[in-house]
Length: 123
Image (cartoon, rainbow, N blue to C red; front, side, top):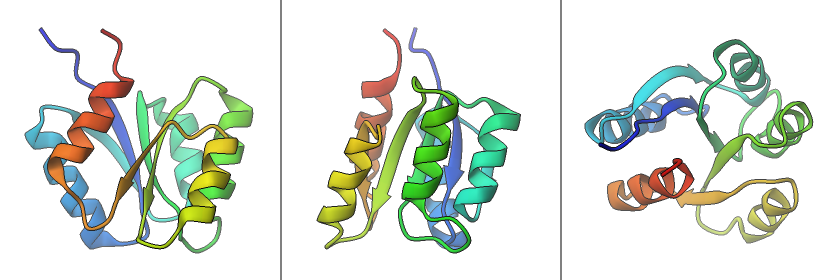
């Protein structure tokens, strides 16, 4: 029996959030919340206590790296998967330094996403 994750999606693109939600729920996971910027994502992380957060890097108000830093200060065991667009290698390196565990790239590949989620789930 596979354990399913409670996931928070943080992305300023409504289309991206909808696509991710579809992929995750089809894989049997529960999307417990969505946020459209890093500050909102940070506040929802505190309120919802998700197992995993998917975090877009480029967002208004507070970007994904800023939100990642704040979440890791709060909970160093947080499981955060950064969502990157092509050509964001420097930001990916930065995110790893701040505690991101996995990366998924846009455009989304359902197999890549489910593999990243499974990698973070307790066995």
